[in-house]
Length: 222
Image 1 (cartoon, rainbow, N blue to C red):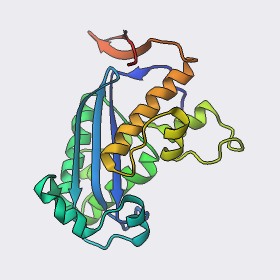
Image 2: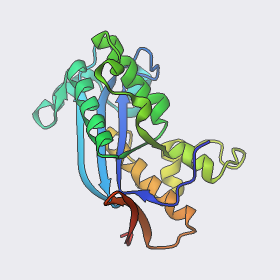
Image 3: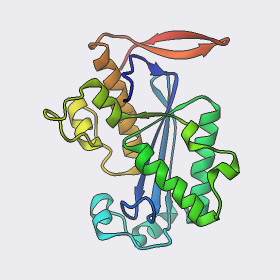
Image 4: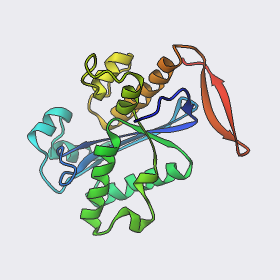
């Protein structure tokens, strides 16, 4: 069972993807969104699109609104990569932030986004991420859906806890099924969850290492 967080780690990275479909064994990511927050404040973000090597399912297009033609048309203003380059870039970002001790924040991120990344990497490159000395299971993960179940395990009162529901429940602007927007929304939901865990007490206490010991700093939520 997920633990209940009373503090926000110093460095957290929201991560989300939009995809060609829902089957992690066969579908592909068509956009990746990352956003880093330090001491609860956004400091970096990146979004890039991917031209998939398979069709986008009609049901998926109804959710995120992207066709292959839409992705092609984004080349003038956005980064559009091949499947291979998109996988390499996503792994580079995750590896870099893992090395910095960041926690990766998402919604169903282990079962969906990271699992699709792992399977796609194996399918495209013919080798596992472990062969690249990168073990996804070693990432520090905060899943806002699992965290919400730790806060309130009653499924009868709140049977559905997708990101859209959590945004509405915690008063966070929804991401609109845009990878970067949803990555940001997961981080904002998590911060609100921590505030709820502390019974709304302010300011937040944010953890960060100092000279090898555990310390904390107080920040006031804007």
